[in-house]
Image (cartoon, rainbow, N blue to C red; front, side, top):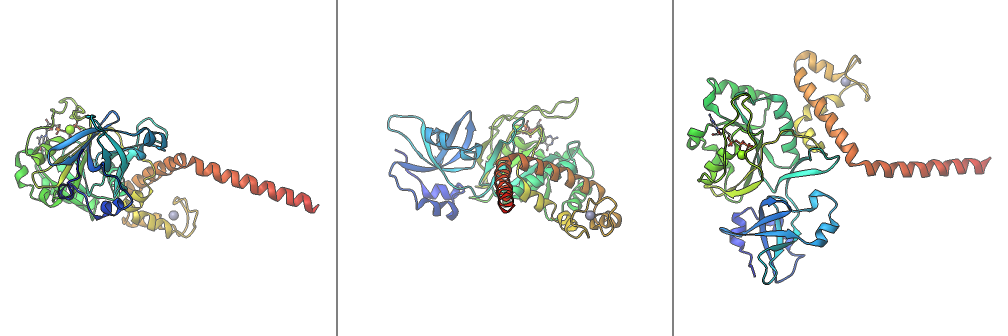
Length: 362
Ligand SMILES: Nc1nc2c(ncn2[C@@H]2O[C@H](COP(=O)(O)OP(=O)(O)OP(=O)(O)O)[C@@H](O)[C@H]2O)c(=O)[nH]1
Ligand SMILES: [Mg+2]
Ligand SMILES: [Zn+2]
């Protein structure tokens, strides 16, 4: 039998939010653990310092699941049980998540992929040379804000360019209110700011394209070269998708760090909250247009056109907003198909009733 070590759990990100959910649980054989790795429907659970065990979900959990969100993910706190004589634990309950970082699963109509849960900071990692792209940062920020955690932009490979300060101030100007840091692998010890985020009990996740140096940062934070890293391709400076699974580690500063595989594309699901957070100013402008159905093309009293003219809103940002908003709306329409279907049913019923009433009166 495994016992829960509360002191360890608090060090590992456990807090009163999760603790308040325990009241409803009562079984002697259950222990609390955090999912630190995920591979082919198996979940590695860490329940004490350097102590972990692989686990699977119960048939009941599988049967009752409505989708990916009902299965464990890296970062989750779970209640599990180790059946007598077994080497594999069983996950009985997933604690309600404080934050969920997710994207639309590539190639699937409306299924999502969870990158990490219960994270405090999302490190949006991009190399400061060829990978740096404001449009992509808009996408990543929308996705990070949506999770309910705080995004931080990490500009890697600062050693490869001359004017680091100039680039930092350009990024800062474009994304006010977001912390931005530059770092380079030969001088990580100068990156004092990392300590701030990696306080004991806090969890951070590294996300970004392949080859930008996520695992290189993770290795530094772990204090050991345990994650494999590979040179980027010389021909196009792209990474080789070296990291293939998501995993969480304890850092030398006490906080937790999650490394993830490089993403080819970041597609949206119902990231409406993230959109409003990243483009709140644009949505505010739209609400000020004279006509509520304004197309922002030629209309009189269009607040967007005015802002574009005055330079308050750049054409590039307006374009990014429209692109992301269209994707989010499209994904939401698909995901909430059943709501529409439901609405249609109600509408049909109402019009039928209306017709019958009308006939009745004739
Ligand atoms: N010049 C320079 N190279 C770096 C720096 N950080 C990482 N690299 C190199 O970039 C390459 C890719 O680094 P990784 O850490 O494997 O990149 P990753 O983001 O984890 O890539 P995936 O796992 O494929 O997503 C390696 O050869 C690193 O040594 C840096 O600050 N400067
Ligand atoms: Mg990697
Ligand atoms: Zn308008």
